[in-house]
Image (tube, rainbow, N blue to C red; front, side, top):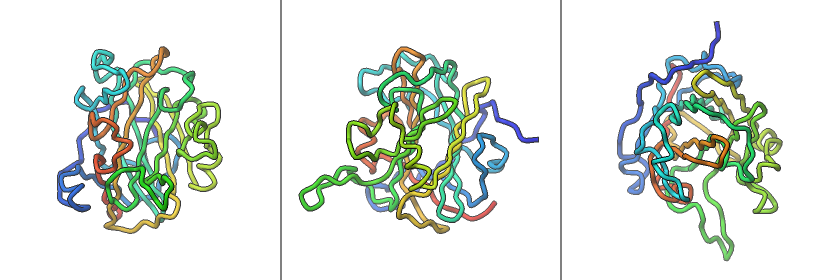
Length: 254
């Protein structure tokens, strides 16, 4: 019988290895397993894939006025994530412990209960903002999923930069069309599950490939964002520097 996992008794599946050049020499690395995944917010498809556990105050990002004093322990905010792939599509499963969910009320996606995924498609590292022929170019990709009964998705792309993360203007349709994206959410007794699948525009996937990846979860209990927890930990401005991210290796079927 298909079921939603409600626990976080999970094992970290990361190891430090030298891949991706000097900038990524000691980057934590985990695996994405080749597997058919149904994006439905359930966890049965993910059995046998090792999760990455993200918990503890050392994983809190403490910029923008946030403090470790805001965090009341792993039941307040912690999470695990897993990765899979099939064809040119990536899949992620997040199981989040969050003792109080709030409907989106803040103006920007990442100020609400929100799941963050950052992708460095060629595992190059370096700054996300680069000068290209006199104009600023954004490197890497991101997916933000705002937690609600109908999750809104943001991919950091908009004609008006002020609308990139506006919670009233989700980019879900763009995510579904250009990214072939899918997303599902299920509440659990301890928090929620977010499952997402997407194709990174212009990226082909193959076994053995390495991607730069960072994940995060934002927590808002109803009075503004109070916590942000990330896989690699409390690195200031991590979203602007792909060298601070970890790595995911695409492996075969299991």
